[in-house]
Image (cartoon, rainbow over all chains, first blue to last red; front, side, top):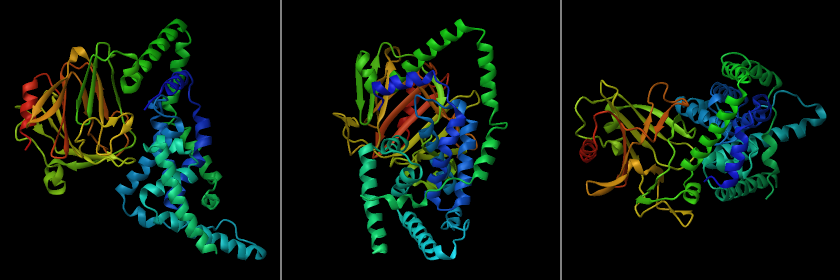
Length: 183
Length: 284
């Protein structure tokens, strides 16, 4: 529900043109990581990020600062893109595979630590992929997209307190499994 | 709560990917809209007075729109002369609702094309088609299944009839009900409500409560709310929804029956209130 502060902020923002270059710079890593946390596959995350920005840039003349910030707007499109792709091509789910850390090969001294880190990442990805859709989405928005609980609430339609309690419950469960593995 | 471990997957996008995408977005067709806007701005610099007037009009419209879409704000500043509540639908009537006309899309809604003929087979819960429609109207093959991707709101099915004079009838059937009155009470949502509809209407288009199969329904004359079902329906379409709260050719009718919600939107020079009620009553 819109309150008076929102209205004043919206009225101010009407007069300010959006700096789309700045939006690109600030939002690209967030959108990319949101997808990365969702699909756990770099190539797929890049494809989805590209689709999101193409769609946003094509329709940005319709962007309405009264309704949402550029960030919230982009995350709305991103989630739509993700959902559409999952609906359109169920096979996409089969493409999801854990990220392989091939870019830098560890030195001999780092082998054990690097191996452990890689195993940890794979374990974490599997934990995320096992989450129910709603919980997975919120974790991706929070830790991949870097959104605050308030921003997540705006993007998802949940109340802020609901977002907080779902995230708390989910992260506590993940932490327990994480700790069990590292005991 | 230690959530540090959850940041382990975070990584910067590959510079090559980021640069390529930036380059792509800086080329047509992505820049066309921005370039058009720059040209318009350049021209408008020669019309400072006109710009100021336009800015004032835009601000006024924006404020009016906010009043229109925000029931709480509106209720606080404008005299409501009548409030109609039927299940999850609340209608505020006042003398000074601004004329609002436009189009838009809620980006949280997912649209899936379906065939009207397949509804009874694939979506039996939504197979609630009327047995009577006004003469000349033909059921269109294209229908749509839609629902919010971010909220647990139930799915809906939308079917459409058209005649050769561009007359349109759209029927939306949705799961879910609001059995015991308005969806908000004392500032908190009711848990038994699957939906909430809010309308601010001007008194010249006086809404009324009519009965459909002995169930109360809200009839809103002059209110156009239509959806564009053309291809590619799955993709985000900023022109999807068309609305106009001063359309003399439009009606909007809502009611609830047996746990399902029904909405009929019409735009036609010939469909009367009686036709609309007859159509609604012919839904089994």
